[in-house]
Image 1 (cartoon, rainbow over the protein chains, first blue to last red):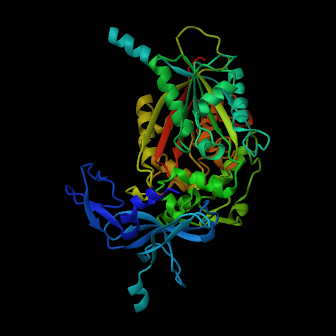
Image 2 (cartoon, chains in turn cyan, red; image 1 turned 45 degrees about the horizontal axis):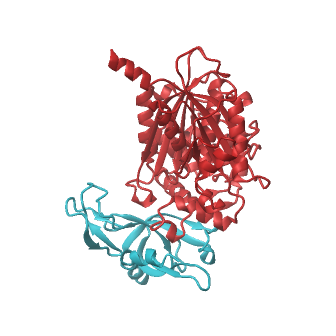
Image 3 (tube, one colour; image 1 turned 180 degrees about the vertical axis):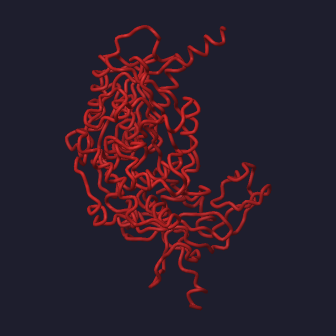
Length: 136
Length: 398
C-alpha cells in the first residue's frame, strides 16, 4: 500500500513546495536538504509558481503495472520558470499539439491506481497554460 | 625502495583468464540459477578448471522478477562452490561493470587471489507490465517512476531533445542499429542474427516517438561470466593470451534525469572514461574498440560524445560515416551490442567485457577486430546515474 510513503510527499506532490538555498539562492525541487548546486544545507521552503515549459516529451504506450488504464499517456521533462526541471505527465491537451518549449502549468490529478480496492495516488501533472489558451 | 616494492605489488596485474556466455534469448526452459550455472561452468572450463575464492554477481531484477535476494550465495551453492565468499552487486544496467570493479578491488587488495564475476538476468517469467515496472526501478521512485515513466520513455525524451538541439535528419541514429545488427550476424550468442537495411529502420513501428523498434534493444534472458586472477609474476600455464585490467573507474550522479544540469551530457560516462585513460596513461587514439551502452541508440551517440570520440552533438556522424564499424576508426558493439546481441539488464556489462576479452585474445572469430590490443568497456545504469568504465589490454608477449 505504501500509504505513508506517499503521505510524506504530499507537500511537494500537491503544492509544488520546494526549497531555496540560503547560501547560493538556488531554487530546489524536489526538496532534498542539501543544495545540489553548492552542497550546503538548504531547508528553507520555497513555493514554486507551477509554471514552466516543455523541455522534451514522448508518449508511453507500454505502461508499467499500475499505469495501464491511462495508456497511452504523454510524459515530459518540464523546466519550471524558477529553474529546476521535473518529470510529469501532460494532461488536458485538447486539440493542442505538444512541442518543445510549450508553456505549461501544474494541476493536481490522479497518478496511479492499484486496482478496485487499492490506493489512489494523486500528484502534479501539467497542462497548457490556461491564460495563454484563452487569449489564443 | 620499499615503497616502490609495495606499490609494484599493489599494482600487480589482474588478468581475465576465462570467459563464458549463454546465448541471449527467451530461455523458457531455464531458471535464473541454471542460466548462471551455464555461464559459470563455461568460464571455469575456459580458465582450465580453476576454482574461485569469491564470486561477484551482477544482477538488477531478481528481487522483483524472481523473488530472490542473496542471489550470489544461491548461485555459488548451485554451482558447487558452497562455502566461498559471495556478493551481489546492483547498479541497474551498470551492474556488470560495477561487479568487475569490486572483483578488481578485491584482487588488487591482495586479499583475494581468484574471483568469478557473473552477470545474470531472467526476465521472461513475467508479463510486460510487470517487467516495465521492474525496469522503472532504475529511475527515482518518488519523482520519476511514480509519474509512469519507463526507460523507453526516458530514452525517447533524450532522443527528441538530441534531434531538436542538433538539427539532424530523423533517421540519423539508424546506423547505430544497422551496425549492431551487422555485427550480430556472426555472433552465435546473439538474439537477432539478421542484418537490417536503412529501409527497415525508416519503416519500423514506433515504440515511444521518436524511439522506434530499431532504436530500442530487446530485453531478454542471459548470463555471462569472467574468471579473474591476480598475476603473481611467475611463468604460468594460462590457457589463453593474457588480458589485463589496465584501468577501472566508477562514477555516480543524480538518479533522476531531470536533476542533471544538462540531460544530454552523460557526466558519469565522461568522468569515468577520463579516469581510466589517466590511470592507463592512454589517449583516445590508443583505443582499438569501445564497447558502450546502447540499450537505446541515442545513448550510443551520447556516449561517444561524453567519452570524447566525437564533439558535442556530433556522435551520430560516427555511425553515419562508418567509423563505428568493425573496420572503422572506433568500432563499437562488435558482437551486436544490446541492440542485436540482446540486452540482459544487469548482466549486459559482463557480456561486453567477455566480448572485449575475446577481441583482445584474438578469439573473436568472424567478429575479430584486426590487431586489437586495447579495449574500453563502459556500461551505464538507467539514464546514466552510474557508469563503470574499464580498459582491458593484451599483455605483450602473451
